[in-house]
Image (cartoon, rainbow, N blue to C red):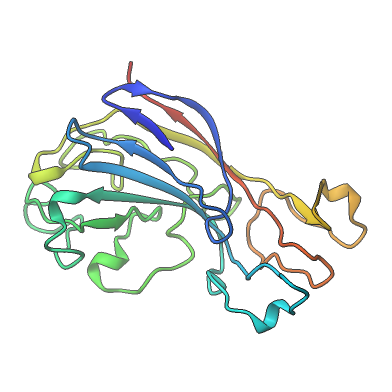
Length: 225
């Protein structure tokens, strides 16, 4: 769903279901040509849905290695498609971000360490945006200064021209719903579970459910007028 374009578009409180089970994604356009934009998806530890009476363990799976779920926010610059993700840019690099070095599709890592670009790891628990009481980051704002940051942010940077978009993403939080025999119920309808509603720190799969849990993430988007 397209949320914002050139200051015009939807703003408010939005909800995303987990992407391994539902085709939910939000797109926020950052430029007039619509070639630079943010994509927002909800990534959660997943399993394949049980279908046809087949045991879930016998089916392929997706996102099962994710230890902590949250919002994945991607910055896409289609003008970099020929380079793909071979041109790394990160804080501390000479001339960055105005040097034009960045990925075609960059995961905006919530921890601000830019581990992927620097080759430190292939992703970790602190890359997704979430609310929790330990190390979560539940917002993504424009920079205070286009050159000094902070980073990551919602700025546009195509061709090395940095532009503050004034897009504010905040109030990122998670809720949990349970689908049992195709009936959506609250946590109170199950005697088996005791779940902290704020923390997304478990692999939410229980064998007595015929259908997987739904873990929607919410966020608030504010666009410039």
